[in-house]
Structure formats: structure tokens, C-alpha cells
Image (cartoon, rainbow, N blue to C red; front, side, top):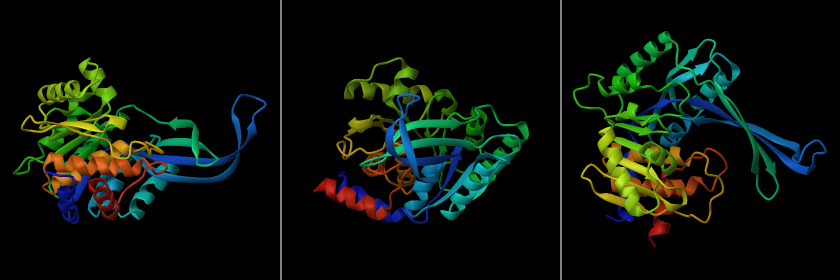
Length: 331
């Protein structure tokens, strides 16, 4: 199967419905023009130019799903604050269903502020995170579980985006995997650690550093990645494993045990890697929910990641952009 042949799945994205569960946050960008070095410390003094916010963390794969012509529903938790209100409104304006976004009184909505110095292009010079990582209140978790049981029967796939901010735990994963549907729901995971709580999902994605830490292995060759994928597959009881490798692309082991390595698209044109993993898991989930085999889904995900790293901050791609990129790479 070639990369160009994977394009046949794009039209099938329309009509798909993906539920995205995870940690929600608001990303704030403050951009200023560098004027001089401060007399107080060896840091640039920036003259303010603009400020904007975009939904981040688990919101980003949902935005990618929506941009690709499918319907996304988000499930997660925000605080009773202005950032939470702004975040929910931004999702709604993008056409995303926010019925599963719960407000927990006393909790702070995660806000990640990036300060960028503008010269030839904006470059990040600092980041400040306002984030709480404590578990959800018992009542909030019960309400979230009830929503997941109800909503899982109305979607084609569930994507779990775990930023380890207290929302996703083993009990929520178990709730999804045993939601009472006639057939087992298709659940994918973008993990940043705490791998055992995701046992039994259909597709599991992590990056090289996370895989190395869990397996206590050094990954330095295609052979070592293949071994790592097989070990994760066995230990977690998952069907498909994808390990992203940054500028080296990604490695995958599918349900049949076949190993693949997909080189990175546009490795020399990286501008900002923020959210690239979110795009990868969104494409993998959406393509496989539409019926694509894992290798075709990986081709599309890899091409999409090569597009978003050229853009500032959390970015999305459209079917048209993705098709053009795949055709260009296949020439």
C-alpha cells in the first residue's frame, strides 16, 4: 500500500464522530518585538504587539478532527473562571460539541502562557503554566463517567488525550471499555506516561522518551523501536502501537505483529513542534475509525504532522492541505 493510495480514505472522514476525552487547557500567546536586553537580567525587553488564545491540550486533537470534516465532541473539566468560559466558547465557535465539558467549582482552568519575541519570525522565550494536577472531585468524576457511557454509544471512536492533569484515570478507561455497547468501542490513546491505566485500548501512541522510560530501554535503531512496540503491545494488551520519533518519523506495530517505520515528512522545515503529537493521534483515530488499515492511517498522520510543524502553536490541517502534501511527497 502506497502513501498516495491512503488518500482514498480522506472523503470518508466526513460523517465520522469522535469523542475526545482528556485534559483541557487554554493556550495564551503574548508576542512582542525585541527592543534591547534588560538592565535587570540577561533577557530581552519586548514591546507588546499582540495577545491571543487558542484551545490546547486535549482540545487540539478535537480541533484537528473538526478541521478534517468530521464531528468532534469534547469531554473534560474546566474551572469556574474566565479562562474556562473562554475555552468553552472557543470550542463552540469551532463547531465542537462541548456537552461533555464539566465545570468543577474551585478548580483552576489550565492556562499556559507562551511569551514570544518577534524578529524574522516569533520565537518562544518563556512559558508560564497555571495548572492543577489533583484528581477530580468525586461528584465530577461520577458525572463524567455518566456522560461517557451515554456518549460512547453515539460515536465511532473515543480518543483519550492524557496530559496528566488529573482528569484521566484507570476507572474512566475501564468505564469506556465496558460501556455496554453490543460491540467493543474503538478507543485510542495519546499517553504521556502512566501507561498501565490504558490496558486494552485499540491504539496506543507515545513518544520515544516516554517509551524508553517505561520499558527501561534505549531506542536508537529501527530494530530497537520494533522491539519496544512489541513489548508495549504485549504488556498493555493493545492492538496497535505507534511510537513517534520526532525528526525520524514514527514506528508502528499493528495487530498482526507487523513492524513499520515511516520517515518524517519535511524534517528540514520545522518551525514549531507544539501540538504535532495531537495531530498524529487525531489522524490515526479518524482514519482508522473510517476503516483505514493502520499503515494507511500512519501515512496520513505523518504527512499531517509535517504540515503542522510549519505553523505557529497548536495548528490543524484540512483534507485539502493533507491531500496536497501527500501528493507532493508521492511525486
